[in-house]
Length: 344
Ligand SMILES: *Cc1c(COP(=O)(O)O)cnc(C)c1O
Image (cartoon, rainbow, N blue to C red; front, top):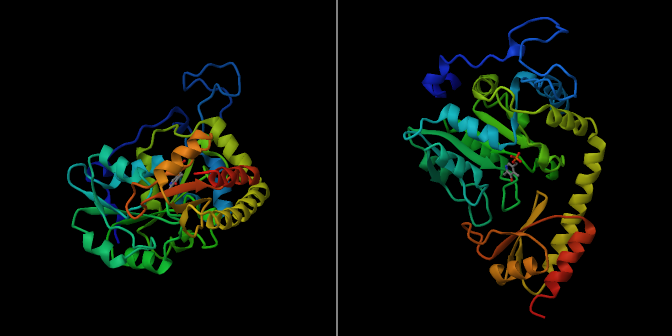
Protein backbone atom coordinates (compact mmCIF):
# COMPACT_ATOMS: atom_id res chain seq x y z
CA UNK A 1 0.00 0.00 0.00
CA UNK A 2 1.25 3.47 -0.89
CA UNK A 3 1.22 5.39 2.39
CA UNK A 4 2.05 8.71 0.72
CA UNK A 5 -1.32 8.51 -1.06
CA UNK A 6 -3.05 8.53 2.35
CA UNK A 7 -1.34 11.67 3.65
CA UNK A 8 -3.36 14.87 3.40
CA UNK A 9 -2.12 16.46 0.16
CA UNK A 10 -1.39 19.91 1.61
CA UNK A 11 1.17 18.34 3.98
CA UNK A 12 3.24 16.75 1.22
CA UNK A 13 4.72 20.06 0.14
CA UNK A 14 4.89 21.62 3.60
CA UNK A 15 8.25 22.89 4.81
CA UNK A 16 8.39 22.21 8.56
CA UNK A 17 9.66 24.72 11.10
CA UNK A 18 13.41 24.52 11.28
CA UNK A 19 14.70 24.94 14.83
CA UNK A 20 17.92 26.75 15.64
CA UNK A 21 19.77 23.53 16.47
CA UNK A 22 18.73 22.01 13.13
CA UNK A 23 20.42 24.73 11.12
CA UNK A 24 24.02 23.71 11.73
CA UNK A 25 26.11 20.58 11.32
CA UNK A 26 29.06 19.64 13.50
CA UNK A 27 29.71 20.32 17.16
CA UNK A 28 29.43 23.85 18.50
CA UNK A 29 30.43 25.01 21.94
CA UNK A 30 29.27 28.61 21.85
CA UNK A 31 25.55 28.69 21.28
CA UNK A 32 24.31 32.12 20.25
CA UNK A 33 21.63 30.85 17.88
CA UNK A 34 18.49 30.24 19.94
CA UNK A 35 18.10 33.34 22.10
CA UNK A 36 18.54 31.28 25.24
CA UNK A 37 19.75 32.65 28.57
CA UNK A 38 23.49 31.77 28.58
CA UNK A 39 23.75 31.11 32.34
CA UNK A 40 23.77 27.36 32.98
CA UNK A 41 20.95 26.06 35.18
CA UNK A 42 20.68 22.67 33.51
CA UNK A 43 17.46 23.88 31.92
CA UNK A 44 18.49 27.02 30.05
CA UNK A 45 18.97 25.24 26.70
CA UNK A 46 16.19 24.00 24.42
CA UNK A 47 15.62 20.21 24.50
CA UNK A 48 16.80 17.89 21.72
CA UNK A 49 13.92 18.14 19.22
CA UNK A 50 14.80 14.67 17.84
CA UNK A 51 15.14 12.94 21.25
CA UNK A 52 18.15 11.05 19.85
CA UNK A 53 19.44 9.43 23.06
CA UNK A 54 15.96 8.41 24.13
CA UNK A 55 15.12 6.93 20.73
CA UNK A 56 18.41 5.05 20.67
CA UNK A 57 17.52 3.34 23.95
CA UNK A 58 13.98 2.58 22.76
CA UNK A 59 15.39 1.13 19.53
CA UNK A 60 17.68 -1.15 21.56
CA UNK A 61 14.92 -2.30 23.90
CA UNK A 62 12.33 -2.90 21.20
CA UNK A 63 14.65 -4.24 18.50
CA UNK A 64 13.47 -1.66 16.00
CA UNK A 65 15.12 1.04 13.85
CA UNK A 66 15.18 4.66 15.01
CA UNK A 67 13.48 5.71 11.77
CA UNK A 68 10.44 3.67 12.87
CA UNK A 69 10.05 5.46 16.22
CA UNK A 70 8.15 8.62 17.10
CA UNK A 71 8.10 9.99 20.66
CA UNK A 72 5.11 12.09 21.65
CA UNK A 73 3.89 14.16 24.57
CA UNK A 74 1.91 11.16 25.87
CA UNK A 75 0.11 8.81 23.47
CA UNK A 76 -2.45 11.52 23.07
CA UNK A 77 -0.04 13.45 20.87
CA UNK A 78 0.53 10.73 18.24
CA UNK A 79 -3.23 10.02 18.27
CA UNK A 80 -3.88 13.69 17.45
CA UNK A 81 -1.03 13.94 14.94
CA UNK A 82 -2.14 10.79 13.09
CA UNK A 83 -5.62 12.25 12.73
CA UNK A 84 -4.25 15.58 11.53
CA UNK A 85 -1.83 13.93 9.09
CA UNK A 86 -4.23 11.49 7.47
CA UNK A 87 -7.81 12.72 7.89
CA UNK A 88 -9.33 15.64 6.02
CA UNK A 89 -11.71 17.51 8.41
CA UNK A 90 -15.35 17.46 7.30
CA UNK A 91 -14.64 14.69 4.79
CA UNK A 92 -12.74 11.69 6.13
CA UNK A 93 -13.72 9.28 8.89
CA UNK A 94 -12.21 6.83 11.35
CA UNK A 95 -13.57 3.58 12.80
CA UNK A 96 -13.46 2.74 16.51
CA UNK A 97 -14.58 -0.41 18.33
CA UNK A 98 -16.57 0.47 21.49
CA UNK A 99 -16.26 -0.06 24.35
CA UNK A 100 -12.78 1.40 24.04
CA UNK A 101 -10.45 4.24 25.03
CA UNK A 102 -12.26 7.58 24.78
CA UNK A 103 -9.50 9.69 23.27
CA UNK A 104 -9.82 8.39 19.69
CA UNK A 105 -13.35 9.72 19.44
CA UNK A 106 -12.78 12.99 21.32
CA UNK A 107 -9.67 13.75 19.31
CA UNK A 108 -11.43 12.98 16.02
CA UNK A 109 -14.36 15.19 16.99
CA UNK A 110 -11.99 18.01 17.94
CA UNK A 111 -10.56 17.75 14.44
CA UNK A 112 -14.04 17.57 12.83
CA UNK A 113 -13.46 14.01 11.65
CA UNK A 114 -16.43 11.68 11.53
CA UNK A 115 -16.37 8.65 13.86
CA UNK A 116 -17.89 5.34 12.78
CA UNK A 117 -18.32 2.53 15.28
CA UNK A 118 -18.17 -1.27 15.07
CA UNK A 119 -18.90 -2.58 18.55
CA UNK A 120 -16.93 -5.45 20.05
CA UNK A 121 -18.71 -8.77 20.65
CA UNK A 122 -20.28 -9.70 23.99
CA UNK A 123 -16.94 -10.95 25.31
CA UNK A 124 -15.21 -7.86 23.91
CA UNK A 125 -13.59 -9.45 20.86
CA UNK A 126 -13.19 -7.98 17.39
CA UNK A 127 -15.63 -8.92 14.69
CA UNK A 128 -13.56 -8.21 11.56
CA UNK A 129 -16.51 -8.52 9.15
CA UNK A 130 -18.44 -5.91 11.15
CA UNK A 131 -15.50 -3.51 10.97
CA UNK A 132 -14.87 -4.12 7.28
CA UNK A 133 -18.56 -3.44 6.54
CA UNK A 134 -18.21 0.05 8.06
CA UNK A 135 -15.33 1.07 5.79
CA UNK A 136 -16.13 3.79 3.24
CA UNK A 137 -13.94 5.40 0.59
CA UNK A 138 -13.25 8.14 3.17
CA UNK A 139 -12.12 5.85 6.01
CA UNK A 140 -8.49 6.59 6.79
CA UNK A 141 -7.78 5.07 10.19
CA UNK A 142 -9.12 2.15 12.24
CA UNK A 143 -8.25 2.41 15.95
CA UNK A 144 -7.90 -0.86 17.87
CA UNK A 145 -6.85 -1.17 21.49
CA UNK A 146 -5.16 -4.34 22.78
CA UNK A 147 -5.22 -5.00 25.71
CA UNK A 148 -8.42 -3.00 25.46
CA UNK A 149 -9.40 -0.23 27.86
CA UNK A 150 -11.82 -0.49 29.73
CA UNK A 151 -12.38 -4.22 29.23
CA UNK A 152 -8.82 -5.46 29.95
CA UNK A 153 -8.61 -8.25 27.37
CA UNK A 154 -6.30 -8.62 24.38
CA UNK A 155 -7.87 -8.63 20.97
CA UNK A 156 -7.40 -11.79 18.96
CA UNK A 157 -4.27 -11.38 16.78
CA UNK A 158 -5.79 -13.27 13.84
CA UNK A 159 -8.70 -10.82 13.80
CA UNK A 160 -6.32 -7.84 13.88
CA UNK A 161 -4.44 -9.38 10.93
CA UNK A 162 -7.68 -9.80 9.00
CA UNK A 163 -8.42 -6.09 9.46
CA UNK A 164 -4.84 -5.15 8.43
CA UNK A 165 -5.05 -7.29 5.30
CA UNK A 166 -8.41 -5.96 4.16
CA UNK A 167 -8.11 -2.23 4.74
CA UNK A 168 -6.33 0.29 2.53
CA UNK A 169 -5.70 2.71 5.36
CA UNK A 170 -3.89 2.79 8.68
CA UNK A 171 -4.67 0.34 11.48
CA UNK A 172 -3.55 1.86 14.77
CA UNK A 173 -3.14 -0.72 17.54
CA UNK A 174 -2.90 0.96 20.94
CA UNK A 175 -0.77 -1.24 23.21
CA UNK A 176 -0.73 1.01 26.29
CA UNK A 177 -1.06 -2.10 28.53
CA UNK A 178 1.01 -4.60 26.53
CA UNK A 179 3.69 -4.89 29.26
CA UNK A 180 1.13 -6.52 31.59
CA UNK A 181 0.10 -9.08 28.98
CA UNK A 182 1.45 -12.50 28.00
CA UNK A 183 0.54 -11.74 24.40
CA UNK A 184 3.48 -10.24 22.52
CA UNK A 185 3.48 -6.83 20.88
CA UNK A 186 2.47 -6.39 17.25
CA UNK A 187 5.71 -4.45 16.73
CA UNK A 188 7.14 -7.63 15.18
CA UNK A 189 4.52 -7.32 12.42
CA UNK A 190 5.58 -3.85 11.28
CA UNK A 191 7.59 -5.14 8.33
CA UNK A 192 4.80 -7.47 7.21
CA UNK A 193 2.12 -4.76 7.27
CA UNK A 194 3.08 -1.29 6.14
CA UNK A 195 -0.31 0.08 7.23
CA UNK A 196 0.25 -0.97 10.87
CA UNK A 197 0.86 1.68 13.53
CA UNK A 198 1.59 0.56 17.11
CA UNK A 199 1.19 2.89 20.09
CA UNK A 200 2.80 2.30 23.47
CA UNK A 201 3.38 4.56 26.44
CA UNK A 202 5.60 5.00 29.48
CA UNK A 203 2.53 6.10 31.49
CA UNK A 204 1.43 2.69 32.75
CA UNK A 205 3.89 -0.16 33.38
CA UNK A 206 6.92 2.14 33.18
CA UNK A 207 5.55 4.38 35.93
CA UNK A 208 6.04 7.69 34.14
CA UNK A 209 2.50 9.05 33.74
CA UNK A 210 3.63 12.47 34.94
CA UNK A 211 6.38 12.71 32.32
CA UNK A 212 4.02 12.30 29.35
CA UNK A 213 5.98 9.99 27.05
CA UNK A 214 4.03 8.25 24.29
CA UNK A 215 5.65 5.96 21.73
CA UNK A 216 4.55 5.39 18.18
CA UNK A 217 6.03 2.69 15.95
CA UNK A 218 5.36 2.51 12.22
CA UNK A 219 7.02 2.42 8.86
CA UNK A 220 9.18 5.45 8.19
CA UNK A 221 6.75 7.22 5.83
CA UNK A 222 4.24 7.43 8.67
CA UNK A 223 6.88 8.43 11.23
CA UNK A 224 8.28 11.09 8.88
CA UNK A 225 4.97 12.87 8.52
CA UNK A 226 4.42 12.87 12.31
CA UNK A 227 7.90 14.35 12.81
CA UNK A 228 7.15 16.97 10.18
CA UNK A 229 3.97 18.23 11.86
CA UNK A 230 4.87 17.89 15.56
CA UNK A 231 5.72 20.93 17.68
CA UNK A 232 9.55 21.07 17.42
CA UNK A 233 10.30 20.73 21.15
CA UNK A 234 7.46 18.37 22.09
CA UNK A 235 9.38 16.50 24.82
CA UNK A 236 11.00 18.60 27.56
CA UNK A 237 14.56 17.93 28.71
CA UNK A 238 13.55 16.77 32.24
CA UNK A 239 11.06 14.34 30.69
CA UNK A 240 13.60 12.97 28.20
CA UNK A 241 16.05 12.52 31.09
CA UNK A 242 13.53 10.74 33.33
CA UNK A 243 12.43 8.48 30.47
CA UNK A 244 16.02 7.48 29.75
CA UNK A 245 16.59 6.72 33.44
CA UNK A 246 13.59 4.40 33.61
CA UNK A 247 14.44 2.69 30.32
CA UNK A 248 17.93 1.96 31.66
CA UNK A 249 16.48 0.33 34.76
CA UNK A 250 14.40 -2.35 33.11
CA UNK A 251 14.79 -4.82 35.98
CA UNK A 252 13.02 -2.64 38.51
CA UNK A 253 10.05 -2.20 36.19
CA UNK A 254 9.97 -5.95 35.42
CA UNK A 255 9.76 -6.68 39.17
CA UNK A 256 6.94 -4.19 39.58
CA UNK A 257 5.06 -5.70 36.63
CA UNK A 258 5.36 -9.17 38.20
CA UNK A 259 3.97 -7.89 41.49
CA UNK A 260 1.11 -6.13 39.71
CA UNK A 261 0.30 -9.32 37.78
CA UNK A 262 0.24 -11.30 41.05
CA UNK A 263 -2.00 -8.68 42.64
CA UNK A 264 -4.27 -8.74 39.59
CA UNK A 265 -4.78 -12.47 40.17
CA UNK A 266 -5.34 -11.93 43.89
CA UNK A 267 -7.82 -9.12 43.26
CA UNK A 268 -9.73 -11.09 40.61
CA UNK A 269 -10.16 -14.00 43.02
CA UNK A 270 -11.16 -11.73 45.90
CA UNK A 271 -13.69 -9.85 43.76
CA UNK A 272 -15.10 -13.17 42.58
CA UNK A 273 -16.08 -14.12 46.14
CA UNK A 274 -18.00 -10.90 46.92
CA UNK A 275 -21.80 -11.19 47.02
CA UNK A 276 -22.14 -7.95 44.99
CA UNK A 277 -20.08 -9.32 42.08
CA UNK A 278 -21.89 -10.43 38.93
CA UNK A 279 -18.89 -10.99 36.68
CA UNK A 280 -15.13 -10.50 36.81
CA UNK A 281 -13.76 -10.08 33.28
CA UNK A 282 -10.38 -11.63 32.46
CA UNK A 283 -7.59 -9.05 32.30
CA UNK A 284 -4.30 -8.76 30.44
CA UNK A 285 -3.82 -5.25 31.82
CA UNK A 286 -3.25 -3.57 35.21
CA UNK A 287 -6.95 -3.12 35.85
CA UNK A 288 -9.99 -5.34 36.14
CA UNK A 289 -13.45 -4.74 34.74
CA UNK A 290 -16.05 -6.07 37.13
CA UNK A 291 -19.81 -6.16 36.79
CA UNK A 292 -21.56 -5.56 40.08
CA UNK A 293 -25.10 -5.46 41.44
CA UNK A 294 -25.44 -1.66 41.27
CA UNK A 295 -22.40 0.14 39.87
CA UNK A 296 -23.59 3.69 40.67
CA UNK A 297 -24.37 2.89 44.31
CA UNK A 298 -21.18 0.91 44.84
CA UNK A 299 -19.14 3.63 43.18
CA UNK A 300 -20.63 6.18 45.62
CA UNK A 301 -20.01 3.82 48.54
CA UNK A 302 -16.33 3.60 47.59
CA UNK A 303 -15.99 7.36 47.07
CA UNK A 304 -17.56 7.80 50.52
CA UNK A 305 -14.66 5.76 51.89
CA UNK A 306 -12.05 7.66 49.90
CA UNK A 307 -11.53 4.96 47.27
CA UNK A 308 -11.77 6.10 43.68
CA UNK A 309 -12.42 3.63 40.87
CA UNK A 310 -13.75 4.27 37.38
CA UNK A 311 -17.46 3.86 36.75
CA UNK A 312 -17.72 2.55 33.18
CA UNK A 313 -21.38 1.53 33.34
CA UNK A 314 -22.43 3.95 30.57
CA UNK A 315 -20.11 2.32 28.03
CA UNK A 316 -21.67 -0.04 25.45
CA UNK A 317 -21.72 -3.62 26.76
CA UNK A 318 -20.52 -2.49 30.20
CA UNK A 319 -23.72 -1.99 32.18
CA UNK A 320 -23.04 -1.93 35.92
CA UNK A 321 -19.31 -2.24 35.33
CA UNK A 322 -16.55 -0.68 37.39
CA UNK A 323 -12.97 -0.51 36.18
CA UNK A 324 -10.57 -1.05 39.05
CA UNK A 325 -6.83 -0.38 38.76
CA UNK A 326 -4.63 -2.96 40.49
CA UNK A 327 -2.94 -1.20 43.40
CA UNK A 328 -0.48 -2.34 46.04
CA UNK A 329 -1.42 -5.32 48.24
CA UNK A 330 -2.61 -3.10 51.16
CA UNK A 331 -4.62 -0.91 48.76
CA UNK A 332 -6.28 -3.94 47.18
CA UNK A 333 -7.02 -5.45 50.60
CA UNK A 334 -8.54 -2.14 51.72
CA UNK A 335 -10.71 -2.07 48.59
CA UNK A 336 -12.01 -5.59 49.23
CA UNK A 337 -12.65 -4.84 52.93
CA UNK A 338 -14.58 -1.72 51.95
CA UNK A 339 -16.62 -3.58 49.33
CA UNK A 340 -17.41 -6.21 51.97
CA UNK A 341 -18.93 -3.45 54.12
CA UNK A 342 -21.30 -2.43 51.30
CA UNK A 343 -24.93 -2.82 52.42
CA UNK A 344 -23.84 -4.01 55.86
C1 LIG B 1 -3.65 5.26 29.53
C2 LIG B 1 -3.81 5.00 28.08
C3 LIG B 1 -2.98 5.62 27.16
C4 LIG B 1 -1.86 6.47 27.65
O1 LIG B 1 -1.97 7.75 27.32
P1 LIG B 1 -0.72 8.69 27.63
O2 LIG B 1 -1.14 9.93 26.92
O3 LIG B 1 0.48 8.05 27.00
O4 LIG B 1 -0.57 8.82 29.09
C5 LIG B 1 -3.14 5.35 25.82
N1 LIG B 1 -4.08 4.49 25.40
C6 LIG B 1 -4.88 3.86 26.26
C7 LIG B 1 -5.85 2.87 25.76
C8 LIG B 1 -4.79 4.11 27.62
O5 LIG B 1 -5.61 3.49 28.48
